[in-house]
Image (spheres, rainbow over the protein chains, first blue to last red):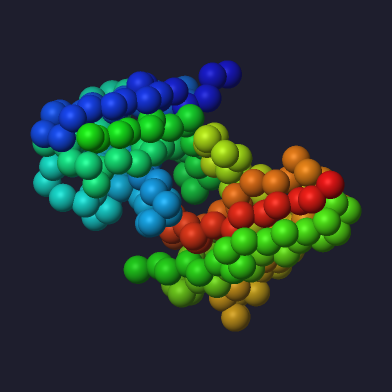
Length: 114
Length: 110
């Protein structure tokens, strides 16, 4: 069984550009989480979905960030416009309906905004 | 909201010794406490977890203890090996809202 899949694995962009990060959860998992990891702030929960519906987006830093989950097998995290302080590793995680709290992480996307 | 504190931030032990990492949490409603291991450049991987109705759980060389009254939980690694070297994160969760500690960088010297 494939784990959580994220793309791209690395992204380098210039300030002001739009960035879209993608995630495919583990098949059968119905909860999906987006995290950001930096040295300064550690691992932060940005938003999570349950059955494709956003449940808590209080961790989204500002309006430049948006996330969608159009179906059970795909989610995006978009930053528009991007800024250098958005540079971080962004992880997606998913969990199954019978054990929502137990989250499995994807490999992450390392984002660098110049 | 939940606040998780983790200590120490760095820990260096000799191969074969034990390592203990401690975390405290603030929200008494938290009921799930996982531990993740993250190697350099890799994803966090779940290594063990404990729920609030259990005081202790063990899996080979790894054990976790939970004191709900004091709101703290600990990770114990016995007979450490160089491949245990990584950053370890504790977390506390309630209703899918997971908060992570700042991490402990464990170095096991051969």
